[in-house]
Amino acid sequence: MTSQLVIKNLHANIEGKPILRGVDLVVNQGEVHALMGPNGSGKSTLANVVMGNPKYEVTDGEIWFKGENILEYSPDRRARMRLFLAFQYPMSIPGVSVANFLRRSLEAVREGNKPLEEGENPTGKIGKRKTVPPGEFRKLLQAKMQLLKVDNSFINRSINDGFSGGEKKRAEILQMALLEPEIALMDETDSGLDIDALRIVSESVNALSGPNLGILLITHYQRMLNYITPDYVHVMFNGRIIKSGGKELALELEEKGYEWLKPSDAENEVTADA
Ligand SMILES: Nc1ncnc2c1ncn2[C@@H]1O[C@H](COP(=O)(O)OP(=O)(O)OP(=O)(O)O)[C@@H](O)[C@H]1O
Ligand SMILES: [Mg+2]
Image (cartoon, rainbow, N blue to C red; front, side, top):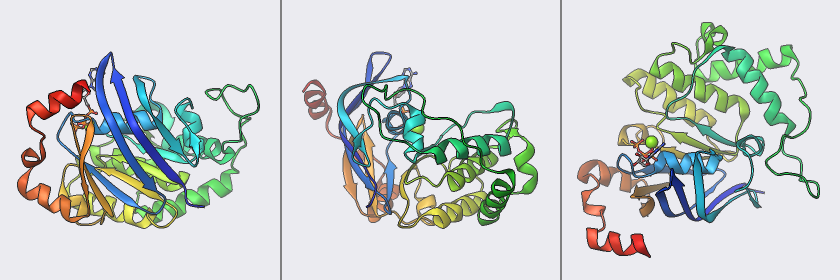
């Protein structure tokens, strides 16, 4: 069965301020969706809310993944269901090597998400950790590193500590390759990359995409979409998706910007209060 992420009328606040104001979106395994829109329109907020970042308060709407309403689930449980978020600004964790970090996350995700027992807290921790044998892990990691053309020296360094912008993005994709998500939210994976890195990262995303992976690719620029052809393009404005189309919509945006799509202020006010 194809995994599906269904977002219905999603409203979310941060510190009492409404940011998402009714988002509807369906991403199926095997599809590539590009999410575009001006700075501050709510793209990262959407990715964070779907992944369960507790900073945001969902005030209305639903998020379904693989037929389950995941709104109350912890980010950990969502990840175990094979939902993945590649961060716009990945965090550094000094003292934790890339290899160790990846092995632990793989172990966690491999335990999966067993069905809730009656009365069990859906936000709670699940199961005991099963280890992935070091030999098996090394083999798998090597294969993924080759696929993504990641340098060997990289994996013994502390995760993201002193990494260049491009290296951080590569580390995110390496993690994604290893965890094999069914739906991946990729937040500006192309930002801060030089031309060669952009090509390599795009090729990596292409290498991972296929019938088993659905991607929501948040980006500002057409340039990444020269390498990765989206099936759908959506434009977010002021906390809502105001237009959806095919890949040609990205070209149109590149040419015309966002102004022509903006609802008039009056229209916006009316719907904001609705
Ligand atoms: N911690 C916070 N406190 C207050 N406002 C916040 C906070 N985090 C985000 N916001 C606001 O939420 C709005 C949406 O931000 P978000 O990061 O989702 O936008 P975005 O579409 O991802 O923008 P960009 O293209 O610049 O990455 C912005 O107006 C931002 O200032
Ligand atoms: Mg953002």
